[in-house]
Length: 94
Image 1 (cartoon, one colour):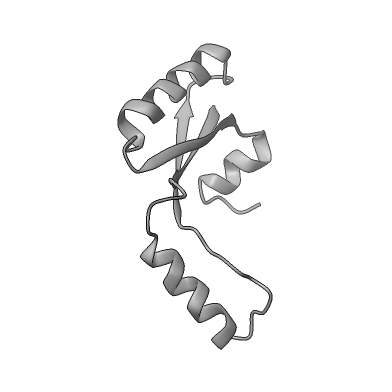
Image 2 (image 1 turned 45 degrees about the vertical axis):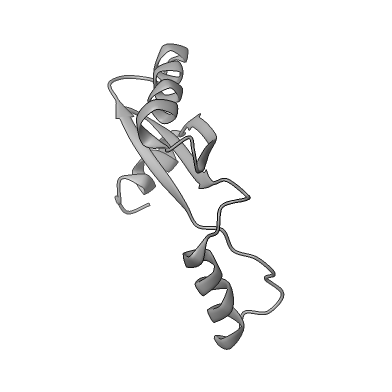
């Protein structure tokens, strides 16, 4: 089985209250030097067999039409995972 990751982020001009809350909490927890946090979404799509260019094209189309809201979000990445990443994404022990 293969897997494809789709990462979606809010557009830069869209307010990100969750990211702001995390950014405010980090220094209070001792994490210094982080100046901004943006929250996003990650989808892992599993396909039968190896990931092909056709699978990637289909995932890009799904990302643009279903997985993201193009008014407020950008699809920032669509890529195949290698075998070790597939196990990790599925929650299996490494």
